Length: 94
Image 1 (cartoon, rainbow, N blue to C red):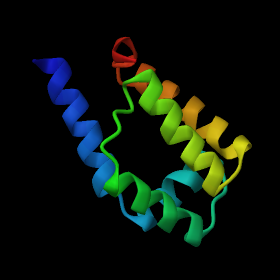
Image 2: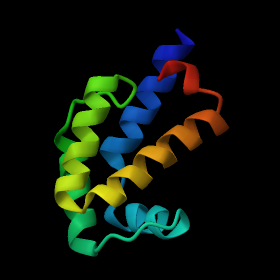
Image 3: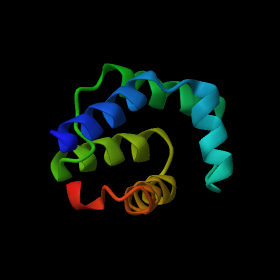
């Protein structure tokens, strides 16, 4: 039950993130994206039903981010996702 709630919360956050929020997080976690790239990523996330906790879906998300930005940025996003999952104690869901 708790596992599903956490997954729903993360999925909802990804679908509702704003361009400004994404740009803020990019700056806060030291990776660079342009406003146009942020718009493309936000649009993709809003229309995606992919589950970031599922390894295959997560790889699809990261490949899309790499195609919008570059592989280096996608790698940083992946590292950030793992770091935040550990920080919030949900890394066992990955």
